[in-house]
Length: 174
Ligand code: CU
Figure 1 (cartoon, protein in one colour):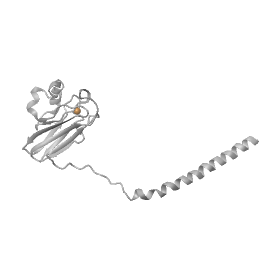
Figure 2 (figure 1 turned 180 degrees about the vertical axis):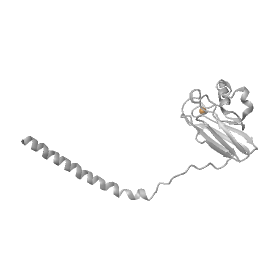
Figure 3 (figure 1 turned 60 degrees about the vertical axis):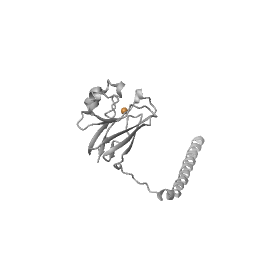
């Protein structure tokens, strides 16, 4: 009986200690709330990029481009594709190909699979390409210059086998 009483007393004491400690801890965050509320969180909606004739786009080890829409004014355009990942180009290579309007993308990429030696552009499909970077691996980049004089929307893709479903976008020339 004595033992049981001792355990009950200890349990009550322990519970009380926990409770009072918990109460004290609640007070601290309150005093730290003010500095945070002075800098309210601002939401940054995804804005369409401003047109520029000096385009920069990144690609990574997760098989992604950093943007899916590029905007440029008509005329001479400089485009840099950067690979910010670490994987070699044999495993996670990326390129960026700007296609002529009306090009069948799935047909283009199907034929690209066997065109490793020509930056994954099949000889039979060269006439569908407005401009393209070479295939790059992690840490590399490639800059190309080309001219588009006709306003419109142009598809861009990565033709590395298997990438096009994740890596495609629109270049809007205005
Ligand atoms: Cu790719």
